[in-house]
Image (tube, rainbow, N blue to C red; front, side, top):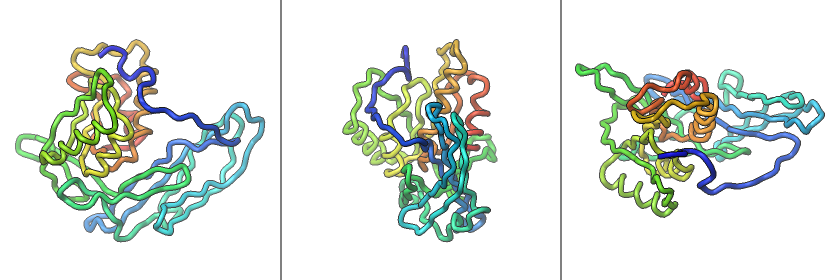
Length: 270
């Protein structure tokens, strides 16, 4: 597919901000073992002071997990043209340690509980997904919240001619769940899917094996920085989705150097 992941082909929105802008809120969960009954939440958000501002600005970032009576605040100071990451850790804010959290589970294993974080809004699910190859044939085993999951997977190849719609995406993912599938392998040769696709996988309990845009018949990009910027932008867009289980840097080919390191930097191991 030529020109994949270039140009505008999905719904867009235009908006203005005040002097500062908040971008890419991220909630990362770590569950306490062996009970998986305590969740340690780390929240981060990027603060941007655009170049058209002449001032150094001081303020307070306030975050809320809606409906949970969890509020955190932290002062900040940002220079003209600066981008700063503000992070709230459970070590600094004990209220970010949640006892008996409502966990997110794959289909047929439990409910798909979701939380909402303000005021740059994002949904997230509390869950922990790990995997290993401690098997006689070195095949990979997945665990969700400490429970071994028998994977019933399928491929998802995005519509190359862009003839998709929310209605079609909803129907196809509903059929996927009804077929007994619990993991969707997102083919690396395709176009990055919409936010709606990932939201539906959260709601339906479908795990996602996420590949990036290299296949056995793909030449490496001439401009590596453009490729890695696209990876970073995509990860920041999708990383809060609890359905997202596994990152794969490419499909049937060597990945662009720097991709695995960038994935760990943005989201840690999956």
